[in-house]
Length: 277
Image (cartoon, rainbow, N blue to C red; front, side, top):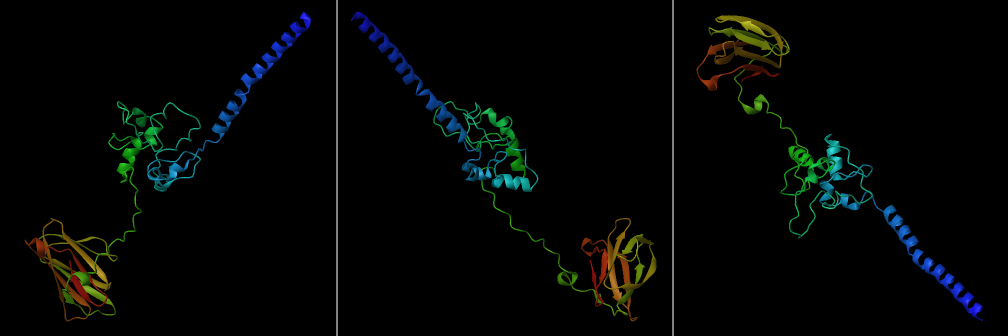
């Protein structure tokens, strides 16, 4: 009888040890599987990259669809660097930062709102510093390009370049010449004592007309422009006069001390109207 009870206690102890081992090992397997499952579900391209203010404040990681800031800098050819891939596990650098490079909102005293990690790579070229902190490389580059970090940049409307008014729209004509078959001849008279450089745009090279001399420029197709200036940089008054000869215009050059009278070009329009500027 004692042997029976002794064997029963032995088998009972062995059975208890086996069950105890199973109970201890059961939680380990689901915990490891749960950790692996949680890690595998980390989204490398979270939606916060495409929400304001991060949409216009932080570059998306490599391999993710570009957000507004990434597209804007890429289109301008000023993308600072290829963004690093999104982290799949915790990093010692992430403890004091939130997405977008912003200082975490915390009431804990003693936290540095401008940690030096903002000024180390890759964050130096990828994240915008919090407001009030010294600018890092990315913040400086955006400021130089006219971007205000953290503020949505509006699309600039197309700007039309204003065209200068035609001579007939900004001044009155100096005289009118009767053209001969659409052509005009100009007798240029230099009444000054200085050499004058002149050129008919599209018809002649730059030439020099000596003081107290004249020259005839024949058969110029209208419209045509004659440019003039004194070699000694003195002031020049230009006086065009129509003649009785069809297709003939006389242009006299004289000295002046009045800056408002200083002129340097004669324009003959297709209808023979003459403007001086």
